[in-house]
Image (cartoon, rainbow, N blue to C red; front, side):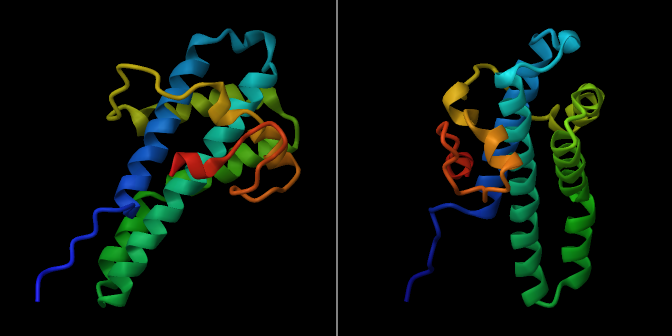
Length: 158
């Protein structure tokens, strides 16, 4: 019997896609003049970033669970610890969005940049239809797979 090779969506592949989305959105936000505040599109972009940060940690948890099942609990916990920043950042950004504290979001975005410096972005491949409606979905407590009126669909990020 031959070896089974999974060529579909793996946690690592989905994590890479989430990280790519984050890196592109951070680059686009950096090009904007946010001193005057966040316009509607920038708010959607930040919410899209939150969904992707949650997605990153979900893939980490999925990978760590596989290690747990094999009895490698130290390796699993090490993996979770190394990537805890994604979950923490997602929660903090989400809290700031829900509290409508947009002035505090820009400094927080700057702290995320080092986590995505290893992602090479030569061309922006995501555009507004990727994050359209993300803010509304986040504020309305919609799940990440729910279409939120504007077309946001985080399943496109995975």
